[in-house]
Length: 202
Ligand SMILES: [Zn+2]
Image (cartoon, rainbow, N blue to C red; front, side):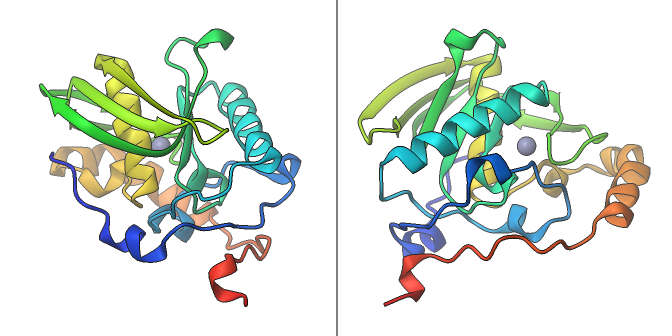
């Protein structure tokens, strides 16, 4: 379960994406293709980014989740928010996160706000040291164990376009077949806002 160098993300480079109005953001559901795309590094730290993070925390709380990554609100940016306890003081915003140390291993059931009704047994490191940037672009380093470490790994997977359903055992597949089929049937490709990165604009 080592870290993979995200070369694809590296090629995308630092993006200065025009963000949609935070109030319009909603959690997107599997099999929305945005969930499969590796996200790009954030290169601009401004009020818009802070508003996005704030809205993500709001959506995470509304959904009673412990973490939410930007691709889950339709944005291909390396941003995630998390809160293992639900206490407002424990909100953490992580931008362009990197794991610099991972150790231990434990298998547990995981769910995902974008894949309701599905749980998958995931083996995760139990100890993770992460570096990231805050909304102002200031670097910080944190150490997480057990649930915290698990949330960070789940959210970072989202930033790399990886989902819990990519990791199902035969048993998980049988247990989740009906819920996945239902999500596929319910999914309607909606007209999302046409978000473009500056890379394609001159
Ligand atoms: Zn998830």
